[in-house]
Image 1 (cartoon, rainbow, N blue to C red):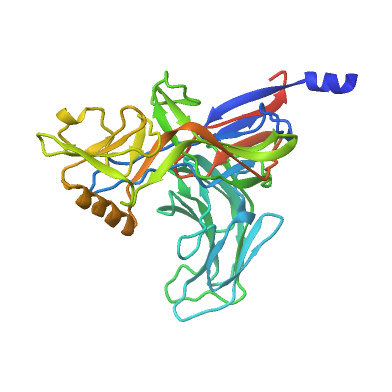
Image 2 (image 1 turned 45 degrees about the horizontal axis):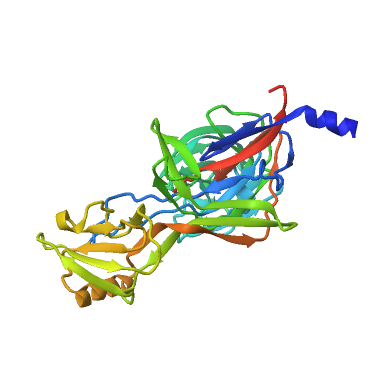
Length: 414
């Protein structure tokens, strides 16, 4: 017991919060169900433009996967493949090899790309940041077989190409979305075909955050699917459960959370705590026409569930004015019990409900995100993550990045 106590005395928890977390000097350990160590992912909502009834704007939320891994971020084994005229091998030694198995006329390249499909589905994505990717490139040196590797990034809109055998290192500034490696058996001359049996491989593939290359370390880690997590920005006085700094400004939100492993009634479970409700309107709701003001703005009300003052809508901008002085279309909730939509295009109840139904049928329903009056907890199977030495990275693959908060054990001297 004394030895265990002394061992624990040499460790301390380090807590970080952000969209991606990097713990240096980490001690390998289970990210336990203790709330101190369980990584918590927070939701967020965002609209890229101002919504209008004729130009709706999707309310983006946090989704995708939560990943916890060592210093090598590139999980090549989990990725799907997209290929042309090659056999593909991805081995446990982190070797990605392609060999030509079919030749057609005037084919100067045979290739394979990991983490991508022809339809763009099942893409392997990484959060925005600066990454350094390194690997050893090799292959046959016969005529018609020049090893080539392309690093695709920025959701496959940009790529960096490298040629020839040897050690390669590429640093990229990634804005988010797909990031992956593509290998070519490449002749370099149009009309000069590759040769069946020619091959190219990349070994010791490694991707780290930042610009400095380090010694190769194989990927270790795991991922788990996130449920959809929303969050609505509020004032600091509105009891937010998360805050962060954006451009020097502290922002606050009431947000959904997901914890991969917590103890509930003596059992390990994952737990989603939903703080934000989502209402999809289809025109069948019990709407009422309250009034039409002097500016020709009709005020429609729905008294069905408690709606928060802070909300987001796909088709209408939130308003704070009473109907008598409202000039533009918008959405409004004053008391938190009644939802109002102000419309100029619809001046009677029948046409307004028909418009809502038409939007729903077209696949662009009027959708409202609002703060729930009380949270909703959903339990699931636990996910037992681990921390990895000497570095642990925690991130999500969500296009919209939410906050993550976690603690990892490090030596007390650090």
